[in-house]
Length: 420
Image (cartoon, rainbow, N blue to C red; front, side):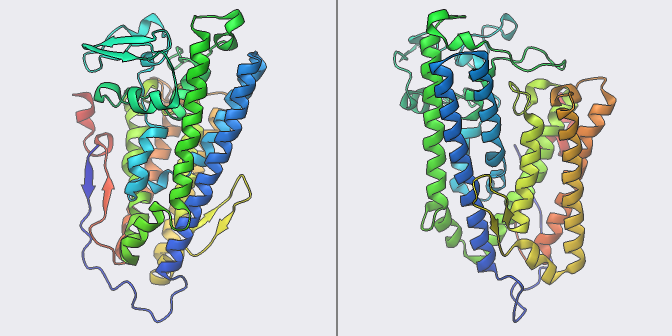
């Protein structure tokens, strides 16, 4: 993913007013509080997911599997709202791959349909199927997978062979285990794994005990990884300390970097426009569960949370404090109104996409070739994200911040290269 650098010239002094509606120090405190609340909710909903998975393991039925899937979907909402903390915070971005890396070559983990294929030139572990194989012989290397533990997943299987698509941990590994492959392409339907895949007494598709062990280990690891980020955003934690070390101007630049990069290159480009251009459900973020519409929606909510300094918690940890929005309004009221209107327009476009999915047409159907109406709904989200990013750039200038780099995407910046 390339980085696009924006030269911000003619910057004015940042702290020229004798009294601001919100001081930079107050804004940074709120920013940290929103992060801590979001990651705390992510941790607590992951613990609820673990409880649902333990119920599935104890009594593997269609009902307990559905409950585990519902708990996974619930756990995604607060986590996706934290993604605006990437790109500017190295503590977050260096950690993020453990919990939300995608896409993944699912043949690394478990059985797959014959259409998946048996090998890949780029990935020697493409169809390793660790659940079926206690010992792996890959590219001259022997890997002992007798015991599927959190340590094994994190330190031996994750990005095995140095290949990023060997995603063995995090939300999407758990998603694949709960749903299985979505073999419907851009037609209706998500993954449809049977509950008996987790039932050693009535096992389907073999290796049920190892599949259970993998699911439990991946969930245990997700919880410990989320606890790490809760601690990092607690008072005195690594993320708070890193933010403070940048000074007020550097801290504000971090906030805007995360907003602009998620809005433009990551979400509008890599996660949405690329898949729309290719009409490819494999580019769908939550591709096994057909939950992509909700993940995109919550990313958009997360950008708003950061800008407005507010967070509506699922666990009672609501935050409402000094914000970048307050500072922009102090500097340039007209720009503040413009950016608010554009953020609102993006949210409305995302709500339309979400409503369409909840009405029965999933995101992978929307991006399908020949679905002009569905394509237009998704394109409207891309257009709104790009448009709001332009106003985020203007906010950067208004606050006198220089040398801000937003993530770019070939799908937006050089679309012809996508088909080369």
